[in-house]
Length: 467
Picture 1: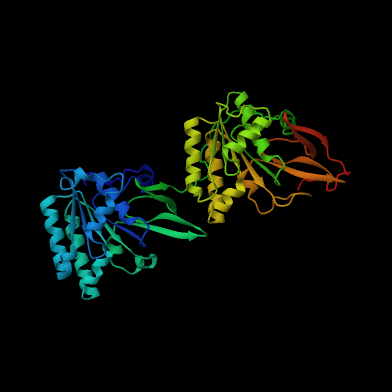
Picture 2 (picture 1 turned 135 degrees about the vertical axis):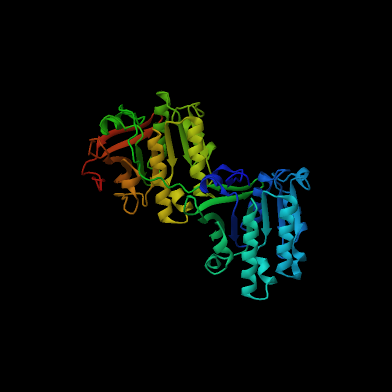
């Protein structure tokens, strides 16, 4: 390519690659069958093909050329008018005569068409044409030299396993290595892209989730924010939780940009408190998003109407996703985009437990949630997260949950029972940069929403519910 970088047409992928693949280099795209290698290669092919600098797609002994073209026609970016004009398909399976014939044909095409990008799919299949390891290495050295002499981006596709990157010689000459994986997780399959090498350039490390769609690979870059190295400005006036008596317990409300965790057992009022937070903000002209994996829009509307609020508020947007087949990576990016597009100042996540169950790795889950809280804080968005704790009665506990780095404030809700009479209680466990009322108090939920009442007395079993 004339440019220094080969773009995919998908901005998140180009961002992971710090601007794209080498525009005049060799990239190996590796992965087991079914991971989307050919789709990714065709994505690059059609995005970069130009009549003056066409793309040439070589098939080998792995998959028939006719099958590659037929499947490519089902993709949104496939342009039939480009075939024979800016995109050319060639079959190298005639290279059964040996690797020398393959090298000669590739060289002839480079001289004849002056392509900007070539794809060899599958490059690994060429190993079968070599009489020995030495012969393959000589072929590889000659081919790499010929490709380097031309301003062309080369994509070598192969059904390589991860361990082969340390033993197969093509990985040594590659300027970039991109690995696609698909790992079964219960009834789901989680796909991830990993940049293993990008010579002379930075890139985003780690596993990046993706989905295979008719538009190509859709990437969700790993969210991993490092602590801010410079100060950022937040408002100096506290914001309301939507419950005035709770504001008083919190020393005047919450700091803008803070994260707050509301923990408690099922039915303790976590969702209702989250709705108070959003509707209280809406009354002050602050837009908010209710991101839920628990209540579908119909259930949520019924709950909101029962509390006397309008079922659809113009300053509140609901982002509902089913916990079935959810990618936490995709969900996080959907939420970030929704908050930006809606210009939200408040976000409620209901609930943390559902997100944790959707995550394949505890460390990665904590990394995601920490990064999300930090990102919102820098943007001045106040975050409220609900967490369901085990058990129904007695003192709840937050042991095992990363409260300290996820939340600036922690509020614990509980159920109480006294001779068959049920009540709810609320205790503030933590407030960062603020004083708070340490007394555990009962509260009720009625048509007016949450009403905080009297301090819990020893008459209630387990009267002190703070831990």
